[in-house]
Amino acid sequence: MRFQQKILTLTLIVPFMFGCGILFSSGPRSFVQVIEPTWVSVEIRDDLSYDEAWREVVDILAKKFELEVISKDGGYIRTAWIYTWWKSGKITENYRVRAIVKFSADRKKVDIKTEANYLKDDTWVTGTDTRLLQTVKTDIMGVVGRTTR
Image (cartoon, rainbow, N blue to C red; front, side, top):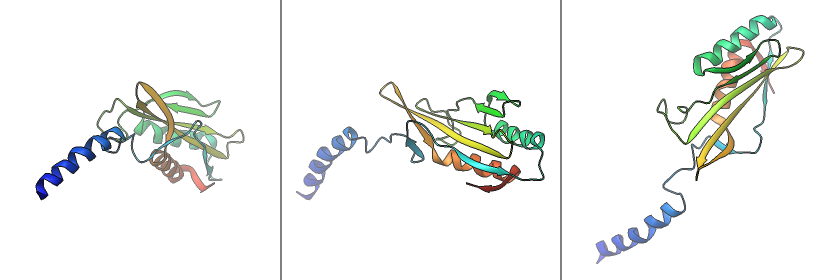
């Protein structure tokens, strides 16, 4: 009798969990659905020239991403989408991330944002990836940074 109750309970609960999306994640926990991702800033150390800071930031991003748009004069870098961030090197077709970096006009800080998309029902849901943002920010701080805001 006890075994039959467990089977009945599982028969009722499992379809409910599938239907509510409990068993299938809507992306990694670090994905946050937003209309427009926010920027974080890293102040550049006083002893670094713009050229040195630029080279360091480009080097950091090029190690993790393919660089899609790069403009030294405009102080702008955008990476290509990568589909391997969430699954630790495994390609996923339903989750992608990229990073955008913009130097301020006075070249004293670097602004960073990450964009993430999760594919749900044939539509890309827009958001950000907080873990990627923290990783990129920490990496950039480590080579050019003074403090964060």
